[in-house]
Image 1: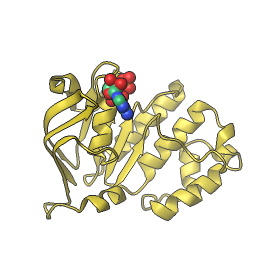
Image 2: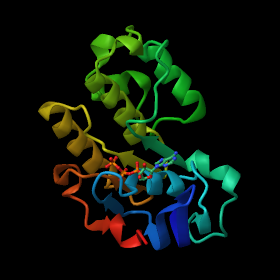
Image 3: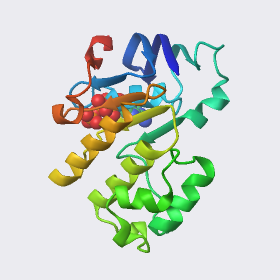
Length: 209
Ligand SMILES: Nc1ncnc2c1ncn2[C@@H]1O[C@H](COP(=O)(O)OP(=O)(O)OP(=O)(O)O)[C@@H](O)[C@H]1O
C-alpha cells in the first residue's frame, strides 16, 4: 500500500486547516503527525483515510505498484481508532467482535477469543459496551485496529484514557504490527511515548498557510 498526497488541502468555511500537502506514505513504515491542539492532525488523518473529502489536491492509494485503487475500494484496506469514533454501545463485547469480523476479518491466526485475551478483556465478554470504562473502550478500539487484517492502520491519540499498563500493552501490540512489511501505520499524537518508536515524525503546522 502506498498513499500519495499531491498538494492536498482542507478548509472548513473560509479557514484552511492545511494546504499544499505533498506526501508519499509507503507500507512497511510508520509516520506520526504531530502539532499542537487544533493544528489539524485529526483532520489530516481523516482526509488521508478518505473519511473526509479534501478541498484541494489529489489523493491516491495504490497496492504493490499496481494502478491506483478506486476510491470506493479504499475502506476495505483501512482501520481507524480514534476518540471521536463510537463503538456500538448496545452490543456486548462478544457481539461487537462478531459484528466487526463480518466486515473486516481479523489477522490470520487471531480469532475473537484470542483478541479478547490480547485486549485483556475476556472477563467482560458478555458486558455491554455502554458499561465499559473509557479505558476499556479504548482497548477495544485499539484491539480492533491493531488485530484486523488491514493494510492501513490509523491511530489518533492511541493512548487516550489508557493507564500505564494499557499504554505498555499498546506499545507491544504496535511494535508487533510494525514487523509486517505490508502494513502502513499512521499516528496522530501529541504524546512522545505514543510514537517514540516511529522514525518519521511530521509536523503538520508546516502546512498551515
Ligand atoms: N467539522 C468541522 N467544522 C469546522 N471546523 C472544524 C471541523 N473539524 C475540525 N475543525 C477545525 O479544524 C482545526 C483542526 O482540528 P483537528 O481536530 O484536526 O486538530 P488536532 O490537531 O487533531 O487537535 P487536537 O490535538 O486537539 O486533537 C481546528 O481549528 C478545528 O476547530
